[in-house]
Image (cartoon, rainbow, N blue to C red; front, side, top):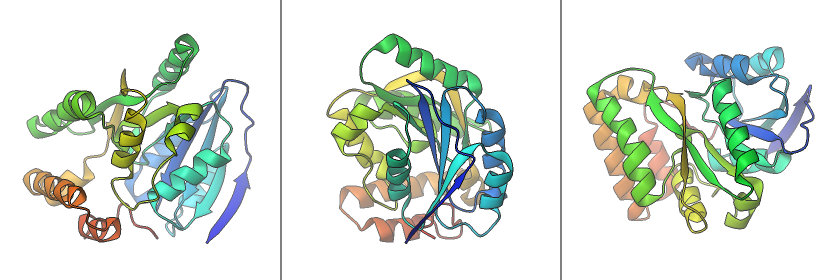
Length: 250
């Protein structure tokens, strides 16, 4: 079921950027307010929030802070991002993880890159966790340099960006509960290699804090094996979200 609630929608100018944020009960993490405080009101930028049916005040927060378009779709995160980009107007799409943070400088970097490029592109910002440890630094380094360069995969916590034209060629996001960013990357990589812009995407390490670094790292690898062997995305997400409820359908 889909419902749409338009809130003070700001009309983007030509050659604009649309930021798509898939949300579900985000108030508890504190990131969404920080994101909106930083990014609302930037000229030529529209913000489209697609919510999975939050019950914690996420909609109220968006109404009070965001000059944006607020949509509700009780569905998987992949479906929410597809719905958001189809409802948006920008020529560049930035899919913003709800527990990552990028600065206005990152948005400026992306807009400048688009102005200079004159062609299709896609990629993400430089991954960095909001806590500092050897394990977390290694995880970010692997994500920035190995996973991206060798496998052509950009996870959503990099805050994925792309030209609308390229997204449409690739067929958008798969309507999955989990690994939607991996499948999307594979689709996009058939056309172009992903870029990495220098500004940081600072990401919550809540999973590593809740489960401890070693256990969460092992869980991540188990999930990748399950994905390779074709396990149902609904079943994988139920396992991955157990005790955390960070990326539920509803």
